[in-house]
Image (cartoon, rainbow, N blue to C red):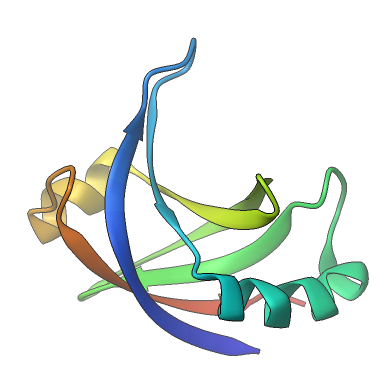
Length: 95
């Protein structure tokens, strides 16, 4: 399964701060339909994510009935991403 969407880059200030992009509701429904086949626990879905020319392996995290994409510092730096900016993300679900 492959998906592409745009969302705002946001920062979570928890005990382990991180940056994320929230997957839109329509795409979350598609992901949830396949999650039972690929999830390895806690509802996490392994994916290959791409922003611009930068690709990385990660897992989607379930949050508040949707999924969020963690965006590494190396990706933000390589693509010049800032909090609050729209980001186009391409996902391939890893089987």
